[in-house]
Length: 110
Length: 110
DNA sequence: GTATTCTATCGTAATATTGCAATATAAACA
DNA sequence: TGTTTATATTGCAATATTACGATAGAATAC
Image (cartoon, rainbow over all chains, first blue to last red; front, side):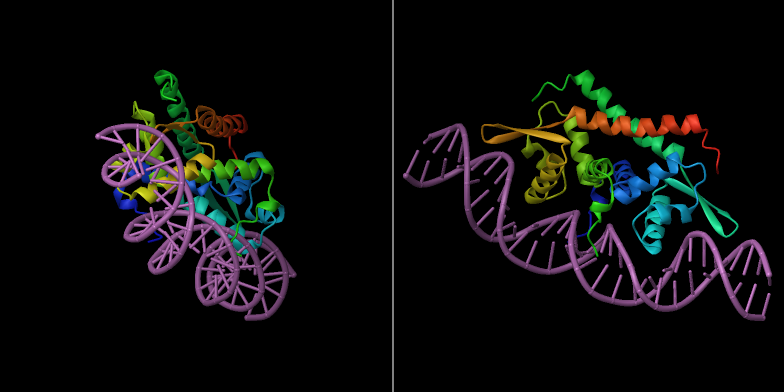
């Protein structure tokens, strides 16, 4: 035990959980927020801004990328990381969808 | 090492990450989705629906509750768990806020 | 009272995550 | 070619998470 029993849940539930989990760390929230406000988005900037070592930042970027939340394109020696709009939009509509259903239900049970 | 360096991030970043992290597991996504569609929301129902043991489900419910995503009220022997609308709305607006800002920026850098 | 039912907690094993130093890789430039 | 610069990978230690059996607690039924 210790491993998540992904095989017992639906693909949708698993894929939403993976995307959400990727943002479940303050460093990765900070990265997204930095990418959002930065005009240029080079990894080196992020290392300078975050209070974490370069390998650790690189690892967080890797996780965000593998979850599909950011994209990275090689730009000479540096790498340009950017937010994947579609992924964020998907998460947004997932939560607003729940809110809408709750309103319709009137959430009366409690 | 091994522990998240929360002290280096802002309160906002940490609190968002905690809420998001609570949903970063398919079982907890499944619980929210079940609470959403169920008319009654008793913990026992959830144990019957999920492919996990009663202690494990109880633990997941505890995490969702401590993250503020659900509320629980005692109802005789059973406990009535419900989604906290405000928390879900907060998450929804967090993501749609990012989307809006991305549109304004035109996300032109990559 | 005892029995039953529902949920929480404890204890513990398996696994995952976080973080960094050291090192590797890869492109640009001298 | 050798050096610098930027990022990735490896290896490892510390900590967190996931899961469940056993057990405890708390309310209801008898």
